[in-house]
Amino acid sequence: MLTRIDHIGIACRDLDKTVEFYRATYGFEVFHSEVNEEQGVREAMLKINDTGDGGASYLQLLEPIREDSPVGKWLAKNGEGVHHIAFGTGDVDADSEEIRAKGVRVLYDEPRIGSMGSRITFLHPKDCGGVLTELVTAAEPGAHEGH
Ligand code: V0V
Ligand code: CO
Image (cartoon, rainbow, N blue to C red; front, side, top):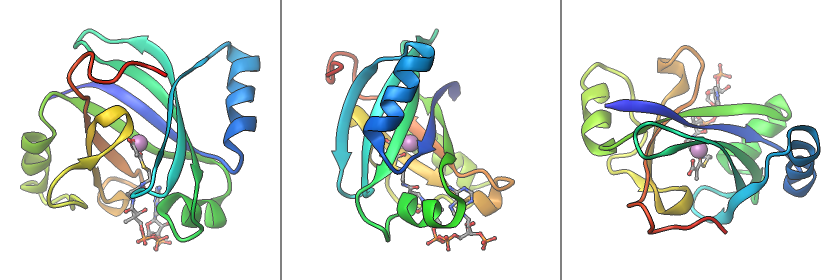
């Protein structure tokens, strides 16, 4: 069951500058940052609030590390802005299969590794009203502390 907005993914060209904008404007601090080679991004997670399901909601700031990555291609075409939304679930495997059975294209056969050791998959934007949609199951609590 999808129980929260896990994050909003925002594509940017300069991660450090964008982090500074969110800090100076809203007071949001970086909770975690990492490079995800497979996805082709350098990213920062800004925690906005905890949620009633034991998870949390974040802004995910994304800078491409390769031009031919999903975020690199998207930036070249659209410029900076909102790239995807992500719903949180306790069971990404079950929920993605259920959604696939409704005829929505799920991009991966098996969920892949996302931010902070989470397991993630994506739904094709053309099947979701133009919105690239991600499903996320967070790692077990304590497995990944913010850093
Ligand atoms: C592409 N399109 C989008 C879109 N990206 N529409 C809405 N939102 C987006 N973000 C549209 C694009 O305008 C085209 O429409 C059409 O889809 C095909 O796009 P394309 O540029 O030819 O690109 P493709 O087909 O090579 O790739 C599109 C997909 C790709 C969605 C398949 O971006 C993908 O695999 N995304 C999933 C992985 C990802 O995004 N990773 C980065 C975040 P027209 O022009 O034909 O109408 S990593 C992350 O979130 C992590 C690590 C995490 O949360 O933990
Ligand atoms: Co994401």
